[in-house]
Image (cartoon, rainbow, N blue to C red):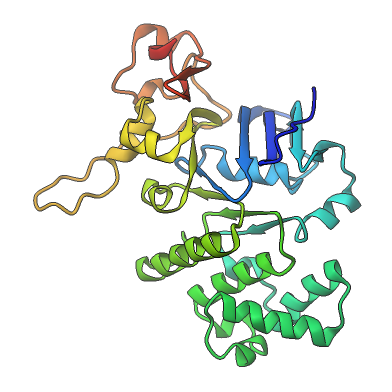
Length: 325
């Protein structure tokens, strides 16, 4: 396949499939997923837990266990190079310097035995080959950038001495430390209370506006997508069900699952009942026949239980539903 020559596309993932298997069973966590990330833009990937969002990002970064994970794709083109062809050492050099990742639980992502300053400067020294003094200065500036007060003092503290919001800001600072071309933020506000969530989202928007940072933002919250993303890819049970620009998807959703997610956004109107999606997302080891969403879908027809849908273009976006085929 020819490489993508559009300079505005920095990541082009084509037909990514991830399977997990052991001696007794095999399940598909990501099923034929394709998407593009445009320079200076935010792609939101949204869906319930178990939709394959995080597995997709971990597969791109080659962070899945090699013993039971099978990753297949036509191409994972990052800045003109196929990440599938990269060896372990090459990917170590790409992670942090060119693609950085912010995980959803900073307490488990940060090393409790090392100070904040040590962890940030280690990343800078490894990839930028600068002196410890210069790395420390840059680390302090990064904490200032992510709005951590008393940054010099915080650099000398350990993760357990910081609040959850501050720890997440440290993770953002580490992600920014080497000026990566792409940041992947995996549920970065999930472990935080509502007030801190709002502050972190405002920080993301500020960084994106000021530095034109390219991002993939993974979340289960359509409200977060509405605030931050330029494009949105809705996933369910490992498959892309709707993909397009955020405004079009939110204003006029097409797929029944997208509609259900939007209806589930809490409405503050008095007396408004909170809507939910009935049932649960299926296990990757026990996916239904036909459409993966058929058991929970209000628009389900008999053919939806027999035939698996495929992505089709509808009004400038992609929809994975038999209603549009």
